[in-house]
Amino acid sequence: MAETQRKETILSGMQPSGALHIGNFEGALANWVRLQNDYWMFCCIVDWHALTGSWRDTRAIKDQIFLMAVDWLAAGLDPEKCAIFIQSDVKEHAELHLLFSMLITVPTLTRLPTYQEKKDSLDSYGFLGYPVLQAADICLYAANKVPVGKDQEKHIWLAADLAKRFNATYKKTLVEPEALFTEVPVMPGNDNRKMSKSYDNHIPIEYTDKQTEKRVKSYFTDPKKLRQGDPGNPDTCPVFLLHKVYSDNPEAEVAPDCRSGALGCVDCKLKLSARLNERLRPIRDRRAELVKRPDDVWDILQVGAGRARTRAESVMDKVRSAMKINYRKKKK
Ligand code: ADP
Image 1 (cartoon, protein in one colour):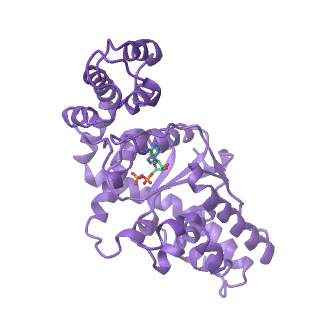
Image 2 (cartoon, rainbow, N blue to C red; image 1 turned 180 degrees about the horizontal axis):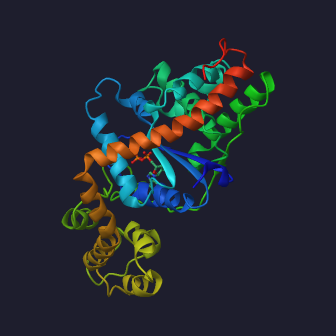
Image 3 (cartoon, protein in one colour; image 1 turned 90 degrees about the vertical axis):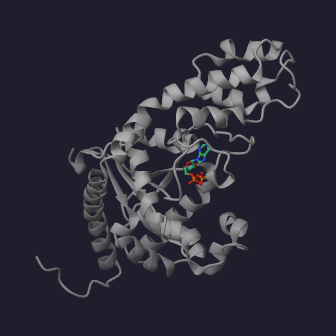
């Protein structure tokens, strides 16, 4: 579809820092897959952002980019509907990052909670400037909306502020982006914290049925339900939370039997892993197919980068012109 037929643009990004899990899927990807029908979408594998954590040892990054592309495609992102690409394939991200870095003060960045949380372990200039690069990622595509969780709200605000500041200093050029909040479930890991690969409490999409079952069996449940027959409390149980996402009618089919004690935790977990495996099967099948065709996946990323570059180059032409730093006439 021609770009002009789309009303609004969305930029979504994810760091290629390991295999995707069902938290990433339910919390982000499934939403992107829905959004690709209504917006012009740019889905960016933000490899330069991943370097803030893994700059010393970069050996894994290429595989992680590939597997992220595979997971995205398997989950239903359609390269016909959205540009799927690698950040570092579009060098304009770095250029706009540099220009934006002039428009923001260091204390504005050091005050951000995300910086405060990790500054003891990550104190590089690159990590400090991370939200500025993120602002560049967004503004480079004239994105109106960015689908994010509440934890990213300040970063989107910062991107909008930078666009506003740029427009006020030079000339109205950049779109001021907004966060697009969608109700998404926060998926619990097996230790009842938020599912995250950094806690190793996650269920990767690439798991086999057996591995999934094993992980589900390792979940914390209601600590007061010790023996089969003990009554349980589904309202505080992470396994029930997952039932709410994956089972058809958990309030009727799981909760009453948990409360009465008729349903033991082992059976409840088996029920869940069966549902989960059923739901993930088509994604896993597509994944297995795509892994066999690496050249096709890299081609999709290249085509996506081409599309992204077209948009980015046109925005950067306007940016340079607004700043009067386009010194030469463009060769036709
Ligand atoms: P991780 O914590 O595993 O490294 P990321 O921080 O890379 O995951 O998250 C990538 C995307 O997936 C983000 O949009 C984030 O909001 C979403 N996400 C991550 N974990 C969860 C979760 N447990 N529940 C819902 N969404 C999640």
